[in-house]
Length: 427
Ligand code: PLP
Image (cartoon, rainbow, N blue to C red; front, side):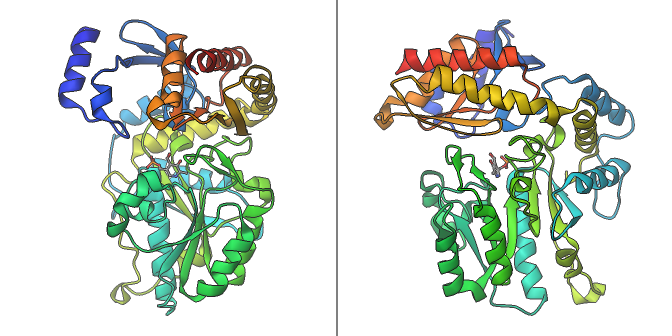
């Protein structure tokens, strides 16, 4: 099919996520056919720097030879087999590897429960926390504390702990009733736990940086304070590392910046290097043991998806962890994080229409000065960047840069200068 035919067919049969389809009908969005390293190519042969790691998930670039080979090798064995009543080598090996790189400190994550996307990894953590208290006879702990402007996914459970009103308010009648704490404010969390501590099963947080909120940074020490408060009030701590995990903030997991180990930790996105859908909820032995008992006691965690722990995805994830080791990904990232900060300060910060730049590691949000909602300024910047050969994606009027960790200094420079030129042109 030609590009024009593909576009026509897309408009006829597809319904895109987080997209006002009426606007999409008029947009000539690139149709991506191929990727190589940090570059995506469309059906007309145009090349674009992937400035947002597909959707914040590509780690070592597209078509990494080691990950490609691992998926192909697994394809020659079996593409899918269930984790319900059976097991398979990639799931076992990946669990061991994940636990070996998981944050460590005053407690340890020792168990891996697979699923296939970030929302379900969080959904599972919420259900585990709820059931864990119930199994201990603590029937009253049925509520969850979440942060203002939090985002934990789009399923009904994860939306229940979502604090972005634009996405979440509409669905309130469908949702369970959580307790919303001011983001980054430990005193507010303490106030809520003092008032409701006995009803709370868990606190769920994005560690250090709330991505979908527009890369909002929490003050230093906040995550540690959440940990201490959870322990003081007998509440489990769920850390959502879906966006921040696998090197995104400069360490393997963002929790490590504050020496915090949660009771439950969700990972997805970068887990497979951004190749295939896979997620995991990691738990401490204390949480896991709460579910043990005789069959007839029904302490079982009754949850499991068809594609949970898919072998191809597990093989990709193992290969991605290998690449972290073989290529020294995190060590190579450190100077590139400094470069990104310098480039943003030099090219983007001086622009009149830039109100703020928020960044942690390879997550950056460029907040534009106030424009009318209908101007869709963030979106216009995206279109201008695309014409110059880079894919970026806004969150409202915050232009997000989330490059693959493998992006070279030269590519990074190009990405930031294109972004700056696009902001200057569009605003
Ligand atoms: N949690 C966080 C912090 C996220 O940023 C996202 C996705 O952007 C999710 C959960 C949801 O993950 P998924 O889109 O894989 O369901």
